[in-house]
Length: 311
Image 1 (cartoon, rainbow, N blue to C red):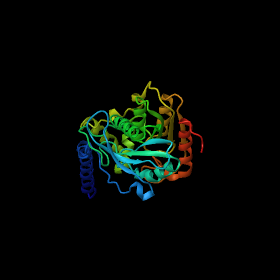
Image 2 (image 1 turned 30 degrees about the vertical axis):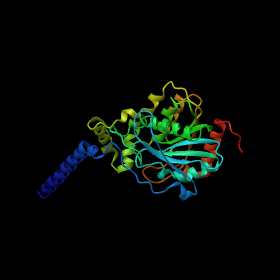
Image 3 (image 1 turned 120 degrees about the horizontal axis):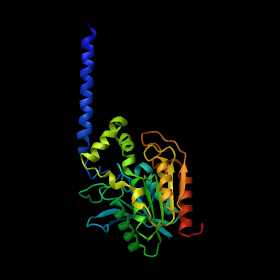
Image 4 (image 1 turned 60 degrees about the horizontal axis):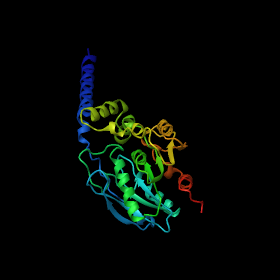
């Protein structure tokens, strides 16, 4: 008989846990603002010895203000639009050591426009919030306009990370002034990586994260369907493209890289085999984990694509 009260207590706790999980799944997504979490900018280019100019510009699709840093450097040969990822991120790409990478790219005579996408950093928000590369691609095109105004003789390329990689691919599909594109950890479809991202960002078990994401999209209108990179670029003509990905990426699987490459004729891939702790693992960690090799590979690709010599 003594077991029955214990069984009843265990059953009550199980019911409470189930109810709590259902509440989290049904209501939790509403607590996430559509404009994302604004990560404060903690470092600026002068921390890394770089002279820069604060810039503001507009995308072509609506009258909002986007903000960024224009880092011209000395005697640049080309300009790069530098685009951060989703989640807790901004133009400095803190998780990926973005400003250290900027310093190294400037040393190779690449000017940079490092931008905050809409709904991130110090750029304006929009009512529909983050669209996982869809409207963000217009921000990249706006950045191309801004570079062309400041440096009309420089060829322009783009470097994007995760969602930023998806954004620059979608921009390059319709912006002929982009002469080369490099992506790092870009996804083929935001919906397909949403569960892994939610698990990594919140610590939520995968069994809870999956219905949580379903609830976010189905009940609360999170527009994951707008992040269909592969479908958006289907049939497009591209400049030279380098897709960087790590085979151990726990967020965007390496298969995404291969699927994107299959859709982009002539695309080069660089698949690394790195190791990093933490829930995000090697996602956009290529430069941080192997900076010399990363810069060498990226600049060699850009030099070739833009037809520079190695000097």
